[in-house]
Image 1 (tube, rainbow, N blue to C red):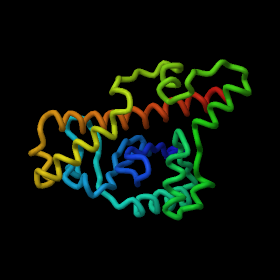
Image 2 (tube, rainbow, N blue to C red):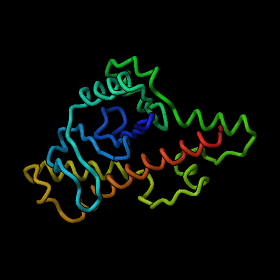
Image 3 (tube, rainbow, N blue to C red):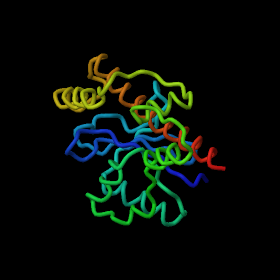
Image 4 (tube, one colour):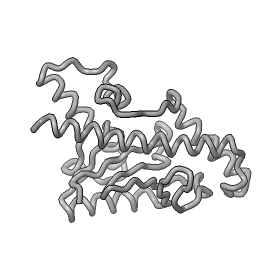
Length: 196
C-alpha cells in the first residue's frame, strides 16, 4: 500500500467542492459530492476509464481521515484549497496528515538554488519534469461543470439525455481532474526521489 493519497477538488469558488479526484492504491477514482450532478452515472466511465462514486462530502472527508489514522497515510494536494475544505467542515485533525506539495516542492527549489518554473504552477511543474499533458483550456472546468448541471436539471437528471457537446464537456472535466491528480503524483514522486 502506498503511503500517499493524492487528491484534487474541482468546483466553484466560495462553494463546497463539486467533486474530487483521488489516487490511492494504484487506482484513480472520482467522488461526486454535488446534488446537482446526481444524474452522472455511478459506475466506471467507459470512455475515460474512471471509476465514479457519489458520496456526501462530510462522509468522504471523514472516511479519508479515518484511513490516514488507521493506515499511517498522508494526503498530498497541490495547494491549501483542499486543506481549507477539511477545516471548513470541522476536520481540523487533517493538519497532521496533510502535505502541501506546492510549498514542499517550492522550498526544495529554493534550498537547492535551482531556478523554479514561473509561474510556479502544477502545469509548469509538469512541463519542467516532462510529464505528458493534454491541453483542456485555461480555467474552463467550472464552466463545464455548470453546463453539465444546467442540462441535468432540465433533462430529468438523465445523463443519456444530455447533448453530445455537454457530454464532451463533462468528459473533459473528468480527464482534466485525472491529469492533475496523476500529474501531482508524478511530480511529488520526482521531488521525493530528488531528496534521496
